[in-house]
Structures are given as C-alpha cells and as structure tokens.
Image (cartoon, rainbow, N blue to C red):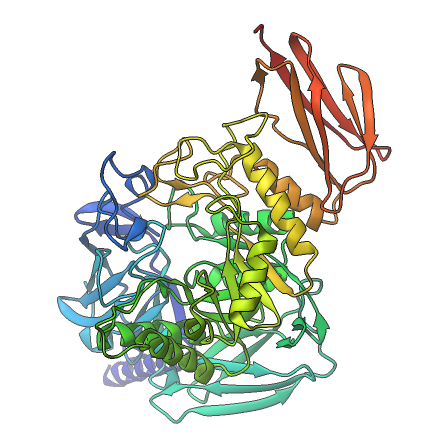
Amino acid sequence: MKMKTMMAAACALAALSAAADAPRSVVSLSGKGWLCDGDEVCIPHTWNDVDGADGSPEGDAPPERGMSIAAESYVRKAARYSRPLPDPTPGRRQFVRFEGVSRVAEVYVNGKFAGRHAGAFTAFAFEVTRLLQPSDNVMEVIVDNRWNPDVAPLSADYTLFGGIYRDVEWIETPQVCIDPVTDGACGVEVDTKADGSVHARIRVLGGPDEERDFKIENPELWSPENPKLYEETFRIASGDEVKVRFGFRTVEFREDGFYLNGVRRRLRGVNRHQDAGLCGWAAKREDEERDFALIAEVGADAVRLAHYPQSGHVYDICDEKGILVWSEVPATNWLTDSPEFRSNLVAQAREMVAQRRNHPCVFAWSVFNEIYNDVPPERAEEGWMERMLAEVRDAMKAADPTRPVVAASDRPAKRALNDVPEQLAFNAYPGWYGDTTMEEDFSNWFEASGRKILGIAEYGAGGNPFEHLDPLPDGRLDPGGPIHPEEIQVKLHAADYRAIASDGRIWGAFIWAMFDFAADARREGGKNGINDKGLVTRDRAVKKDVFYFYKANWSKEPVLHVCSQRAEETANAVCTVVGFCNGGPVTLVVNGEAVGTKEPDEVKVVTWSDVPLREGENEIVLKTDGGLCARRRIFRTRP
C-alpha cells in the first residue's frame, strides 16, 4: 500500500513537472462571463455604443480644445468590470493580457493590485502569479474614459469610447519564458533584409535574453501585389515558444518619392477609424475583416490608421492583403507641457512600435497629427512642443531604426514643428473648409516646408447619400450646415484627385475617410454625432457615389457607375448626369433615346449637363461597348 502511494505521488510530481515545462497556453477571456457595474456584458464591450454617436444636445458646445473626444454629451466615467479567472496550474507563471482598454485601466486580482495602464490603443499585460490562489480567483478592472490631461490624446474630432473594447487573454508559461509583459509585445523582435537574412532578439523572463540569426534562401518580397508571409517558431530551453509572422521587403523615401522594394510607388490610401458602426469600438474580427474587404475592393494599397494604433488583427489583415500601413501615435491637436504627459506619450509610442514592428505592412510610424498649440508670448521656454515630439520621434527610431517617421500637419507656417518628422504630409480640405484649390494648397505647402516631396494625409468632403442637390451652387456650402449633398462630395473629390494625380511630387494621398464614424460633438449634414466624410456609411450599408469614383480609378475590375441614384424625385425640367467608367467610351440613353457618347476624362468621369426630363418616370442609362450598364430612375413632378 505504501509503495502504491509513493508511486502515485511520483506520478503526480512527474505530471506537475511536465505541465510546468510545457509550452505556453493561451486562453481567451473574451465573450461572456463578465460584469460591468453589475450588468452582464460580452467582451469586446463599450458603454458608448449608442450615446457616443447621437450628437451633442442643441446648444451644448464641446469643451475648448476638446472637440468630440472630450465632449460631455456621452458617458464619461470609471466603470468596474469583473470576471472569474481559470485555476492556475502549479509550477507555471500566469499573465493577463489586454489588447485594448479605453483609456485608463487598473487591474486587481483577488482584491490585490496587479498594474495600471494609461492609453486606449496599445496592448498591455501583467503577471498575476503571486496574486492567485488555487481556485476561485476573481479579476476586477477599473476602466476610466474621462478626459485626463496626462494621457494622450487630449483633443480630436472623434468619440472616445470607453470600455474593455478589444480581446483579453489568460497566458500560462514555464518559469523561464519569453516575455509577454514588456511594452505589451510578444517578446520577439524580428528584423529582416531583402536577401533573406533574419535577426531575432528574444526577451526572456527568468533567464538571459537570446539572439538568433538565420537565412531564408531566395525569399519572395512582400508587396501589395504579392503579400508573401513567412512564419517561424522561436523556442527557448524551457520549452516556451512564440510563433512570429514576418516578411521581406524594403521601404524608403528618396528625393523623388516613396520606394517599396526599390521601386517608386505613389500610395493610394484611405484613412480608417476603428469605429465599426453600431458597435462603436467594440469590433469583432468579422467587423474588421469586412472593413478591409471594402478597402481592398475600392483598390486602395495603403491605409492610415488614424489617429492611433489599431488592433493586432487589423495589422494581420493588412499583412495578408498587402495593404501598406501608416501607424500613428495619438498625439493629436493639443499637448500638455508636463513630465507626466511627455512620459505617457513616449510610452504609447514605444508600445506601438514594439507591438507592431514585426508586421511587414507597416511602412512608417507617425509622430503627430495637426498640432494646434500656440506658445503664449509671455512663455519663456518656447519650442517645448517640438522638443517633446522630437523625443517621441527618437523613441520610435531607437525602437525601430528601419522605418521612417512621418507626420500629418495642417500648419504650413510652423516650420520648426514640420521639421520634426523625417517625412511630412498635410491635411487639406480645399472647397470644403476653405476657398482654395488643391493646386494652391500644393504651392503653399512646398514653399513653406522647403520639401521636395510631400504626402497628403487627409483630403475630402462630407456627403450624406440621402441628401441631394442639382444643380450645385457656384459657391461653397457651409460644412457645419444641415445639408451635405452627395453631389458636393463627388465634385470636390474629383477636383482634388485631378490635382493629386497630375503632381509627381506627391508620394501618397489618403482619403478622409473610408467610413463615416462617430464624432459626438458634430451637428451637421442631416445626422448628428457623425463625421460623414466616409466613402461608405457608418453602418456599412451604403457605398456612396464617391466610393465608385475611386474604384473606377484604382481597381482592376471593370467599373461603370451612374451617380445620384438615390435622388429619385425632382421638380426640375433638366438634370445633370455624372458617371464613372474605366472601360472605354460611355453612351447616355434617356428614356430609350441615345443622347451621345463621351470618353471618360483623366480621372474616369463623364458628365452631361442639362439633360431634359419628361414629366413622370424617367430612365437614365449609361452603357459601354463592352457590355457594362448602369441605370438611374428619376421622377419629375409637376411644377
């Protein structure tokens, strides 16, 4: 009997030893099982899915310098999340990892403090091994999305949704493990060269860090046309291992533009907020996949993740689809001149680079967007903003010297600020927020910046697909007014893109924006709480006319589209017919009679003005010799 007991104990010890030395295990803590302030919720979760996009009350102005991100018209609070944790395996180390919490999180396990993270957009992990008991463990997370002068961003024109809005994981490892804590990264940094050389640095907890060098013969270079990825499992002596995907490619800016794999390329880009429609920031993976399927459909080869790092899954999608990524730290509009804010901004930049540096899709890190701060005349220490942002830039370059640092400015005259990034782009809305043209803006930018090449980080106009105006007025509409007719959006994008396409000094241009998104302080365009500059509506239900404009210019698919299809009724005796086509001459047929045939212009647009309409139903048809056909029906009412 004693022998059997000893054998059983030996077997149990062996099993424990085997479990302790097994590779890491990762268990999702997302989904059900969570409470938020006592209510059952599913992770990802936000408490602002409705009130974050319904608009500020009439007469409630957003706070000074704050815009939508600091508005009080949606819920700003500290909320308490809780859930049970799995029972720990004896002899193992335990960690909890959060992909994204907005925007300050304090984590407790069994009532004991595990750690604090400030910043809504980067992942973080805490070791909780010593806080655990054999069973019945409970984790609490205090999440606070209130405005905080020490945490970036301070100001921006988008809603700051609160909550545990990305996935959560439970990680168990051997005692000696690849580090899942430092900067929220995977613990393995991979640098590649186009000849197939790979250098990896492995950060280890409980042991010395390691380095590995190896080579892949004749590697295929990653590009939008061939998004080839490689995968390697990095294992240490304890048995712990991490799989990393990477690619081989080169990115650089030369005197005449942007080069990928040694070939000059002008980037066709869009901006994307992580707002996924009715769920706000609490997007599921299928929501993100849907968004990037639309980005691929329109023919974009680049995306600016404005104005912050987005989920790891987003970068994975871009790796797989061959979409180049501009990845941005949330230094937007206003900064606080304090050691606390400076430290937080540098930390967010360091975390962004550490977590996303292995992704071949990332071609640049971005250090700021539209800095407005003006130094008061009485201030003795001018230049503090530039020094702070230079420190952020230097932190990015120290963490990853292989990629350039860019920025998005809207202040051409601020030369010292615009000299901080290695490469510069401007935000411009000619004809929407100002009376200039894109060509006039170009002239101003190049003269003021002294640069030979520039990017366009944002351009566009608002467009409500259910508001229409024909004919369009000669002057500029009020961008803050109640009407954002879809035809204005088409007109301004076509004018902007003509200028962009004809100027070889522009290394890339990024449409603002791919999708409408929540900006709760806005009251304009027929739908409060929404920035409606997207090519697609916030619910992803409607591709606006301007979506097809870019698809005709960028996509390899045959495109023929007639605009204003949702303008179903008019009292006018004539109408304007605008179409987009990348398939040769277009013939206009009205009520069965051919009106004429035209070649699309240099940006794939065909236009007929003053097309007569009869009373009652009218059918407008565009067609090509290649068999493409697009129809619009419009009912002319009696005067």
